[in-house]
Image 1 (cartoon, rainbow, N blue to C red):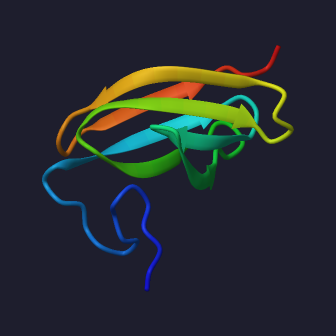
Image 2 (cartoon, rainbow, N blue to C red):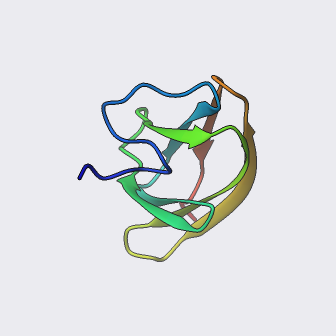
Length: 91
Protein backbone atom coordinates (compact mmCIF):
# COMPACT_ATOMS: atom_id res chain seq x y z
CA UNK A 1 0.00 0.00 0.00
CA UNK A 2 1.36 3.43 -0.91
CA UNK A 3 2.20 5.87 1.87
CA UNK A 4 -0.01 8.91 2.13
CA UNK A 5 0.82 12.48 3.07
CA UNK A 6 -2.09 14.34 4.60
CA UNK A 7 -4.60 12.15 2.82
CA UNK A 8 -2.97 12.30 -0.62
CA UNK A 9 -1.40 9.25 -2.24
CA UNK A 10 1.87 10.16 -3.99
CA UNK A 11 1.53 10.10 -7.76
CA UNK A 12 -2.19 10.93 -7.76
CA UNK A 13 -3.43 14.32 -8.84
CA UNK A 14 -4.89 16.65 -6.27
CA UNK A 15 -8.64 16.74 -5.78
CA UNK A 16 -10.50 20.07 -6.00
CA UNK A 17 -10.59 20.41 -2.19
CA UNK A 18 -6.79 20.37 -2.03
CA UNK A 19 -4.11 23.02 -2.23
CA UNK A 20 -0.34 23.27 -1.85
CA UNK A 21 1.97 24.43 0.92
CA UNK A 22 5.27 25.75 -0.44
CA UNK A 23 7.59 26.05 2.59
CA UNK A 24 11.24 26.92 3.06
CA UNK A 25 13.51 27.97 5.91
CA UNK A 26 16.97 29.40 6.50
CA UNK A 27 18.03 26.19 8.30
CA UNK A 28 17.05 22.62 7.34
CA UNK A 29 13.97 21.71 9.37
CA UNK A 30 11.44 18.96 9.89
CA UNK A 31 7.92 19.92 8.75
CA UNK A 32 4.85 19.30 10.91
CA UNK A 33 1.33 20.16 9.73
CA UNK A 34 -1.51 20.15 12.24
CA UNK A 35 0.76 18.31 14.69
CA UNK A 36 1.57 15.52 12.23
CA UNK A 37 5.15 14.83 11.16
CA UNK A 38 5.13 14.94 7.35
CA UNK A 39 8.46 13.04 7.25
CA UNK A 40 9.66 15.86 4.97
CA UNK A 41 12.36 18.49 5.49
CA UNK A 42 12.90 21.97 4.16
CA UNK A 43 15.73 21.98 1.61
CA UNK A 44 18.60 24.50 1.64
CA UNK A 45 17.67 28.03 0.45
CA UNK A 46 16.58 29.25 -2.00
CA UNK A 47 14.65 26.03 -2.64
CA UNK A 48 11.43 25.03 -0.89
CA UNK A 49 9.38 21.92 -0.21
CA UNK A 50 5.96 21.61 -1.88
CA UNK A 51 3.37 19.59 0.04
CA UNK A 52 -0.27 18.81 -0.76
CA UNK A 53 -2.70 19.92 1.97
CA UNK A 54 -6.45 20.03 2.27
CA UNK A 55 -8.03 23.42 1.72
CA UNK A 56 -8.65 25.36 4.93
CA UNK A 57 -6.83 26.49 8.06
CA UNK A 58 -3.78 24.63 9.33
CA UNK A 59 -0.88 24.85 11.76
CA UNK A 60 2.70 24.69 10.46
CA UNK A 61 5.62 23.88 12.75
CA UNK A 62 9.24 23.75 11.65
CA UNK A 63 11.88 22.25 13.95
CA UNK A 64 15.58 22.30 13.13
CA UNK A 65 17.17 18.88 12.74
CA UNK A 66 19.06 19.31 16.02
CA UNK A 67 15.74 20.21 17.74
CA UNK A 68 17.30 23.52 18.88
CA UNK A 69 14.92 25.95 17.14
CA UNK A 70 11.19 25.72 16.47
CA UNK A 71 8.71 28.09 14.90
CA UNK A 72 4.94 27.62 14.55
CA UNK A 73 2.39 29.62 12.58
CA UNK A 74 -1.17 29.27 11.37
CA UNK A 75 -1.96 29.44 7.67
CA UNK A 76 -4.83 29.05 5.26
CA UNK A 77 -4.73 27.50 1.84
CA UNK A 78 -7.53 27.93 -0.70
CA UNK A 79 -8.84 25.17 -2.94
CA UNK A 80 -6.37 24.69 -5.80
CA UNK A 81 -4.29 27.50 -4.23
CA UNK A 82 -0.76 27.70 -2.91
CA UNK A 83 0.38 29.15 0.41
CA UNK A 84 4.07 30.10 0.25
CA UNK A 85 6.26 30.88 3.25
CA UNK A 86 9.95 31.04 4.14
CA UNK A 87 10.52 30.87 7.88
CA UNK A 88 13.51 32.25 9.78
CA UNK A 89 14.80 29.76 12.37
CA UNK A 90 18.40 30.88 12.95
CA UNK A 91 19.18 32.90 16.10
